[in-house]
Image (cartoon, rainbow, N blue to C red):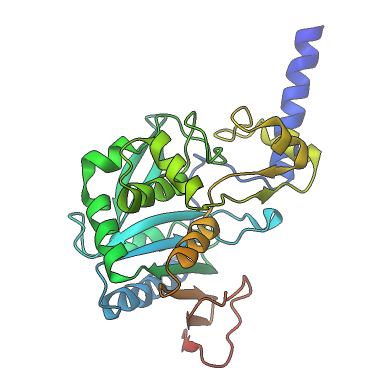
Length: 294
């Protein structure tokens, strides 16, 4: 009787997690029509043009992939775009979870593929951050140093990994720790996290709307709570690395760093240069570049 009750409870919790709109992973890719694909590829072309005209060799890049709006986050996934990436010009070096191997890996992906990774092809956001030249050179060197990049890669993946622990890692945590390798000389994850803390890096916090949602999250594959401090769980605030954490850290460290944010809807692409966020609605303001989609 107890086993039947437990199984029913697990099924109920898993169903509730899905109905609550929690992100899920390793599902079949979303079908995208020819018109939507063409729109996203045009958007990716504008992103690549911005990278090329920047005169830089490296950029931190983030996309709005999963819908994290209920957690107050627009961007979900960050990587490092490298002009001279062996995988292709401006390919993005990033951590991704290899579902078939059930492990995290490093992966180089072209800008078009990176842009196509959004859950909603009718709308998309990408941000680019260009560190000043000295920091950029160090970041480029670290990202292209496979030995270092792999040394900072965790063995277990969790989408909401605690940023100051080594049990799990998410894609944004790897980028943050790579910054520590580039700018702080760290060669191991523990050292990288120590350097980040000493430099004032703040991961999140990601605010969870309710205790019920926190509970339901335990039944979502690749989401874990057992690495987070109990105080954080009770406070419904997870210290997880997100793209906004990384960008805030870079801006605070180097106020002269430049940012370009791009978004698209079904009828336009908006390009904003500067640190004022575009927002989820992708509404242009005076001074933004607007490209009409036909």
